[in-house]
Amino acid sequence: MKIISLSAFSLVAALSLLPQKGFCDEQDAYKLGPGDILQISVFGVADFTRRVTVNIDGNISVPFLGELHGEGLTIRDLRAALTDGLTKDGRIQSADVSVEMVELRPFYISGDVSRPGAVPYRPGLTVRHAIALAGGYDALRFRTENPLMAAPDLKSENEGLWIDLARQKARAISLKAELNKRPEIDLNSLYAAPLQRKTLDEIAAFEESDLRMRLDNYAKQRTFLQIALKNAENTVKSLEDRQARNEESIRLQQDAVDRMNISATKGLVMANRVDDERRSLAEIRSQQGDTEARLVQARHDRDELARNIEVQDEQHNTQLNDSLRDTSIEIEKLAGRIRASSEKLLYTGAIKAQLRGGQGGPSLVIYRKNGEQTMQITAQEDTPIRPDDILEITIQPEQMVTSPNSQ
Image (cartoon, rainbow, N blue to C red):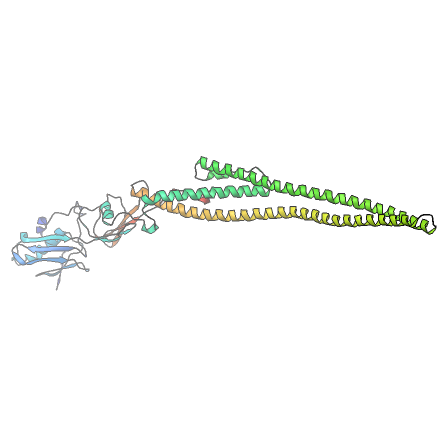
């Protein structure tokens, strides 16, 4: 088939169809393009009536004329071209040619909607209609649930995490104070958390009370051991004094025995007197042995109590350091969970606000072909849509919640 040039149009174009709704002047009149479906008919020529589609090359196939280039023409222009081509031999009158739009080519919608893709075009469509045809806004990109349903649960979860974080921070402060044996703590840093004052007051009061109780219990245990150590030291001193007295008694008794032995050899005393002195010496030495054994045990008990006090301090400090380390780790975990929860709440809150038409709504951009160029148009929900337009929708969350990193 031959391609007919459409550079010249007949005056019959004045009788063509009026512009479609949504294209209000000649400059904005709808231009045909690949994918448009037309119905061409000639009154009185039944075999001529047919539907034709503008192909990828921008052409349509017409009986008697072959292929006509229609891309970029208005319906009025195409009707004029058909009339001009079909009336040259006088068989068809210009008023008998009819060109009707059956189906316009689609437009496309992408981004944060439920059903992105090609959407059939209808005259008068606006961005608001297009979003409705695509199923409305959708947060699939954020992998979140229905924002109106999920927001309360997320807020509750976020608040619970903040409460846990405040408790762990208060515990870390009190553990550091306990390591330094300080009964007073400064919990003012807790009040930076986005929680009610009453809740933070309760957390602070509980931690202060718990710190005092822990310090009191530790002091009581230490006092008990110190009293036991003092008693042990007194026992050792008493036994050492007894040992010294026994040593002196042994020395004196030994002198008495020696004198008795000398007197007995001279016959000055009876033998039984010597035996009595020797028995007294043996008894004193026996008492000394018992005292020395008890002294050894008392010294061992004293040293063990002293070591127990040192071990108690070491174990107490070790436990505090372990607890402080675990608390610090838990704080980091909670901070991470709060960041994740805050991000969910951030997206959900932003989407919720946008779905309700609040400020900071979705970004709406139309990409429209204009000859060889593509225009980027910042759109509103009332902006008209044209076939072949690409509408891109992007939900843009705004900062709505506090993150632990900001503390």
